[in-house]
Image (cartoon, rainbow, N blue to C red; front, side, top):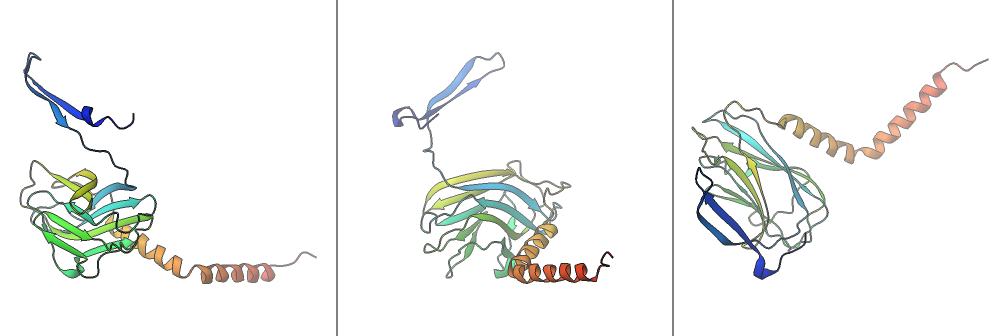
Length: 215
């Protein structure tokens, strides 16, 4: 455990033939500097895995505790080859909590990358973030069928996570309709919480007085 000394922070890779004899290798592959970013990726969901159709993809993230504004500049989603993002302004939704995106350029698309530009003056609150965006599925899914999530500060990658991509006929582990419904319910409950409690209390009192009293 612990961080290795810089002089020893290397990985080794060897290639062996069918007789398990080493015929090539590199024992000086520089290791990455470990960082601590309170972000976790919970899963990947989709509305359809059919090829050559429009669909919606969901990436679920959780911030374990607040992230100070300015410590993270971008959140990037990298799609598999052939997947095309919808660049319409309303095609990206973040629920139930909003990320503090830049007002000038909230998000951009460049090839296989969807980049969310964060406001450097606002903190990222602890909580669950469902990133929903529209895509066009490819005619043929690539062999390197993975989605990547990168959390960056300028050009430095602070956190990365890789999801296995979906393929034709595969069912999503998330029901995106239910996810949206739960988020809407949560917003309604949070906005009307005190009134809801008051109504329940009044209903309970009315029911108690309406019940027959023992003689």
